[in-house]
Length: 261
Ligand code: BJW
Ligand code: ZN
Image 1 (cartoon, rainbow, N blue to C red):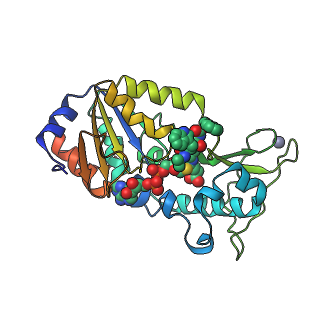
Image 2: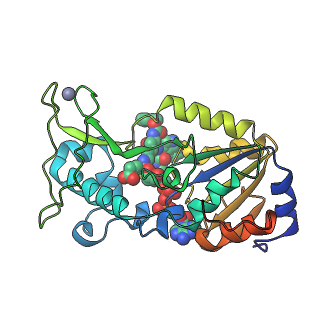
């Protein structure tokens, strides 16, 4: 592990022209959002995330899966961006081009002020019909809380009567082509890629840092723990993103507070 404020990291960051920030669940952890592999607490302790986050899981038990996602959407609506989201948004004010590519299904990057965020795994806030694909407008009111068993009946599509499903990408499903191609292009053209809070186990998203590295970019990881990306990264900064990123930002660009204005 190298010092977060290692002079080489700072030097590369300051002179970077095209930066990609590639984020995972760890960037939202300090906002109180459970990481994907820690999300099955409380009512859902007895299930595996991998079993719920599949089209087959939804077919098998739509009320269980819809209840889990609505509880997570309610948690996101209550949460606020943390210093890591703010530091990432601030980075864009100091460098010519910053592209945020996230695997997260929350909207905390946008709420911190990042623009044009590429969501590789969809969004909790954009449900659609599982049968005809029509977007389902969510009511203004807060999500209904699931029953005692964590179940909640999904609404029905107003056009075809099919079940409404979360607008996220499940295992075995294709990623949205526009976002994936744009993310891969940004990585290919980057000179600095920052990976934040991802285990790097889910593909094809996990291939993004390798694309940047093969194209000659400096690849820096911020993670609270070891990850599958450690060996690939030039620098591994170990610690909570909400502490490491503001420190990195203010060391690289003195005078920065890390809080979006
Ligand atoms: C902190 C911190 C703090 C904590 N500060 N850090 C090639 C090889 C092997 C398998 C495959 C392959 N290609 C495709 C596959 C299959 C599959 C896959 O990857 N499986 C693997 C598990 C082995 N991929 C797919 O199915 C994808 N589709 C696809 O490939 O389509 C083509 C195809 C179709 C059919 C047949 C064949 C090909 C789709 C993947 C969709 C993933 N969707 C999910 C669910 C979204 C909805 C939801 O949230 O419920 O996306 S899975 C889940 O994992 C979620 C996340 O976005 C994603 C990544 O997780 P992430 O963000 O890394 O979170 P965690 O929890 O894993 O890690 C958190 C990290 O943060 C940790 O490292 C902590 O240390 C750290 N941390 N606190 C800093 N404070
Ligand atoms: Zn429909």
